[in-house]
Length: 292
Length: 93
Image (cartoon, rainbow over the protein chains, first blue to last red):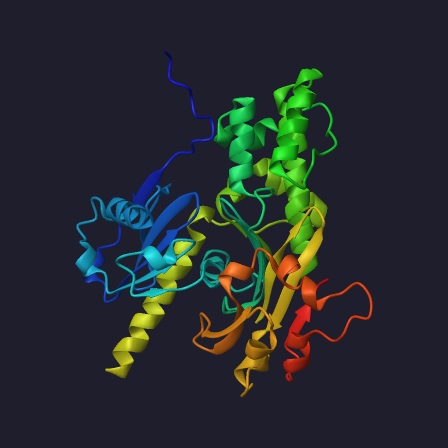
C-alpha cells in the first residue's frame, strides 16, 4: 500500500554561524521554545545569534527539548554544559529539563521581535501552531498589553495544516498558490476550522479549484487574526512572528485589512520566541554574576 | 502591562483584563479572596513583579465561570472589580 503523503509536514532545519567562534565568547545563552506544534532552540554568544534549530514537537516535551537542543548544537563544537544559562518558553516551558528558568512565550516573543525588527516595533502578532497572540510592547521589547486566543484552531498554523492536507497542497506552497486566482473569493468561515473545512469541501464539489479555496481560507484566517489585533489596537511598527509569518497568502491579506505593512527581517520569524528566551537567559546570567 | 485572559469564539469575546502595573503597589490583593471560584492568584510575572493572574485552568472557560456573578437582570457589581481597589480589573462582556 503506498504511503500517504503528509502535505502539512513542513521542513525541519538547523543552522549555525561559521564566522563566530563560540569558545571565544564570554556568555553563551540559549532559549528553548517548546511549542504545541514546533520546538526551537536558539543559542546566542555575547548577544549575537549563533545557532538555531526548528523541529516538530513530539508527544514528549522533555524529549522535544533535548532533540532540538542536540540539533542546534550539531557541528558547533559546543556541549550543553558550555551553555551558561538556558530559559525555557512555550507551552512546554515547565518541562524543559535543561532550563534554569521558565518565561512565558508572550514576553519572549516581544523580546525576540525587538531584537529581530529593532526598537521601533510596537505591535507583534505571533501566529503560532495552536494559538494566536497579539502583543504590544515598548521600545525595550517589554510587554505592555497582550491578547491571546488559544481556544480555537482558527487563525493558527494547525488550521492551515488541516487545509494543506485537505487540498493536498504542500504547506510551503499554500501562500503563493492562494494568489494564483482570477478573482478574490469571499472568505470561508473564520469562526471555526471544522466549519471552514466542511465549507471548503462543499466549494470543491461545486467546482472551485484548489487555489480559489486556498484564497478563501487565507482570507478567512487573515480576517480572524485581524479581529484579534484590532481589539488590542495596532500601533506602528507592526511585525509578525511564528510559522504563519512565512505564508504570504495570509500576511498580505492581513496587511491589506490593517492598511499597514509588516516589518521584515533576515532572521527566521519562527525562532522569535526561542530568541527572546535566549536574550532573557543572557540578561539573567549577567544579573546572577553581578550578585556574586 | 495589561494582560487579557480569555478568548473569543463564535459567540463573542470573553476577556478579563488586569492592569498588572496597578497590582505592584497593591498591598491586600482583594481579588484573590473575592472571586467565588478562586480564579485569581498572585504570582511573579516574567519581570519578577508580584501581580494578579487568572489561573491557567480558568482561562478557557471564563464565560462560564463568571456567569453566576453576571445575572441577566439586577446585576450587582462584580466581586472581583469591587474588591480591586486600584481598579486594575476589567471584563470585556
